[in-house]
Image (cartoon, rainbow over all chains, first blue to last red; front, side, top):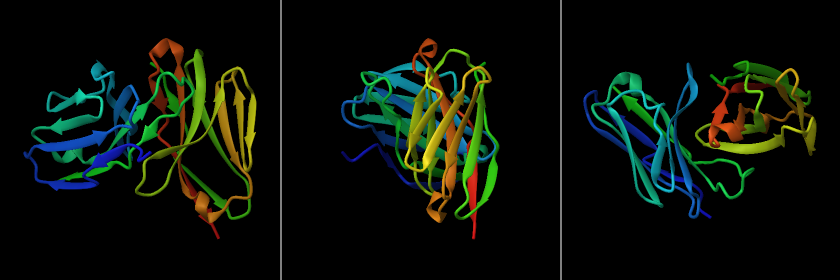
Length: 115
Length: 112
């Protein structure tokens, strides 16, 4: 199993540009989570999906952030327009809810720098 | 709302035991987890404990849970340089649709 795959690993962009982060969850996992990690705030849950349907997006900081999951094997997190304070590491994670004590499987993250 | 707290930094000499502490607020927590994050990588589950247990041991790792005080600890025996990482405490509750709450992470620094 390849695990959760995120791309790109690093993204550097200028303020005002659109940024799209991508995630491929583990096959068969029915929950997908997007987290943001910063030193000051730790890991913040932005949004999560169950069977491709967004369940809770209360962690999405602003309307500039949007996430989609068009099918069970792909999700995107988009920031438009990006701002320097969006600089962080963004993690995608997935889980199989049939195994209640199954751990969250994390991707290696996308390090976003907005200048 | 629910919260998980842990200290941000811990320094330990190589060969000593490391003890990382965590407190949480949700009394209905069902599973509690310790995740390890190495530089440039995602979080990897180290161990977990069900809320009706008070101790779990796995090789060099010992997890202690005091449910009354809502306190969780992770002890790493004979700490090695490879243990240098960020350790995240996390918990989940069946009352919260499987949403997992994470602490901010404890950065474990190994002294020579």
